[in-house]
Amino acid sequence: MEKTLAKRYAAALLAVSDKEGTVEDTEATLLALREAWGKSPLLRSILLQPKISRPERKRMLRKPFEERSSKTFLRFLDLLVDKNRVELIPEIAEMFDRLADSSKGVVRVGVSSFAPLSEKEESTLQQKLIKITGKKVVLETQTDATLKGGMLLRIGDTVVDGTVARRLKALGERLAELQRR
Image (cartoon, rainbow, N blue to C red; front, side, top):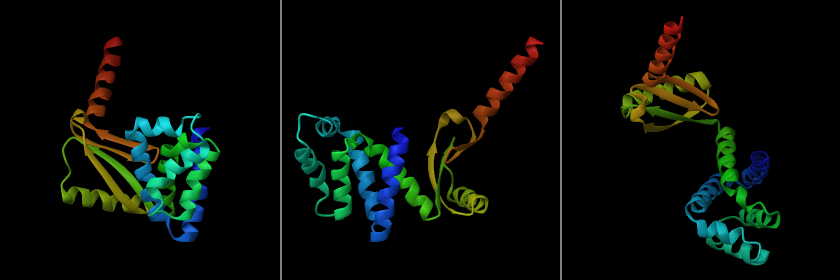
């Protein structure tokens, strides 16, 4: 239910931001707010504290953004306080980011590899993914020594596992199956 609500809020904010031409600013601000939310238990406890009045919670939530954010964004923050949906900020930010990327024809691909990819490897992978998806591809790379080799790709909800670790696991399962026969 929370993801559905977050998607609705994010879609509504995206529609308004798109009309105003503030999508990128709104996206950056939401992502910064999500990061602050994740790093500050104090911020979370204050904004979720029912003993603090709504006007005071609105003031505290708005204050860091008043000088550099659109009035629409500030009203959006007020709405979250009014509807007791402040706890959805991380999910709304994530969903807004995804929806904004989608509206711009961008797909983010998480790439995990045993060793860092060279510029040439990244470029080749990116070009192949552009051909496959038909969209602009942004690679988000990371290294993971537990993969033992190969690559793991995450494109939205799709995972393509071409790692040595997965192949070794599958081989081990196959050998165990053969031994049981």
